[in-house]
Image (cartoon, rainbow, N blue to C red; front, side, top):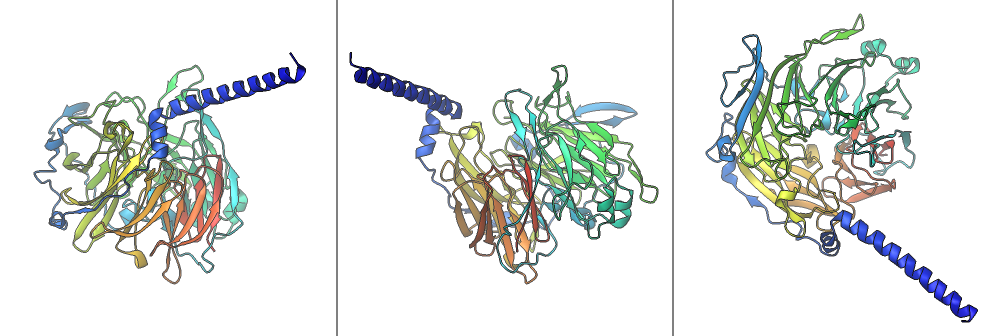
Length: 583
């Protein structure tokens, strides 16, 4: 055989081997992503957005007492409630109707909704989840500054030992606080930060197992980070009265030093010196669901000093903190007293289909808490009797946090859903929706549906919490819908709060799990910033959806930003915290 022929055969064999290896790699990737379903979803768009179903009669009674209708009676969904509380000096667990009544009534009104802290102290800035930004932005150029600060974080091995949690993920919003001088004086801030005028601190718990503390102005460290060693995906909360007390929860189990499973749990830390004061919620045998995680942003009633923390294990924990804080002496302590823990089961909830668990951040108003679960139940709970008042079937995973809205004709709640395996068709496509509910009785005022994809391990639907418009955009509610109509694309849609009809619509080339944020300018203009999954950050005119600017950060962004004045802070999956300014 001639040398040239031998070389040709060798080249062909090499090419054949390369193609075979590439084919095996591609098949493995396709198989991991969902096999044939993945290929189908790549090539086929969904139907996208459906017509709005509007029921104006459901608005009736929104300004009246909180009660159920025949359709929203919890019994319709087969709800069975369970309480664990102290009774006659003993801890008892009771199912069904109980005689529990809170000793000191809870009532979230006025400042107890917004807090007295200057800044963003919880997910979306308050307990109605409506304040994504703080302060007035001085905007002239309507574009992002080319200069931005970056702080490097890290990663943490998953409990499976196969991959890492890195940087900051969903919902992952930072807190941004302008501490009063008397509080700065007693905290373990670096001396130059204590002395700095107009110092504003970024507090950011991440998936690297740390709580990071940064100077908003330049991203430099403001004090030593707190190492906990657990993954933090959700958003922490500060005490709304201004006490330097931080509450946060881990979002996944970890592997301990000896190979043991370390269960997720909730933590309470003093921000005077970084001391851990309390932890709870690990491996709770009261839970119907085995998986424990705390991605919800907790709520504290300042008047009664009571903590409310929904868990993905299906339990709502309530803890009397008994906080003692002396700003002059620089001392802070708590004497936690679990008051009552609440859970429930439904007729359809199982570990494999519609599951228990609260992953979104609850809203509160008066003596009522409103929250959704992973199994499609959105409900209203009386916090003083710890009993469910009404329940609405939204038939999807409620990841997006609800929004409580006080409107001219009463109180309403905006709720949105994400796809789950239980509601997908044979192509892994299904419907999600944005709902407007009557807060008094849970009736559906309108429903806007979207058909989305759900393959390759990435959920489609609404994971981002909406923006309730104020000022120039009052009467709008704006949502990001992921994996719709294309597998990688998404919608950014503004809906009329009255009718649910579209005000404006933008199709994003890459979907968004990150919640959009608004900036309110000195002249009354409103701007909207949306971080997308491919690392692109978009700046819109919020009134009409016109795109004004964009910046490509070449990473994955899942976390929700917080805004203080002109500065937007958010984390990325490639282990960075970024401070970006709108000029």
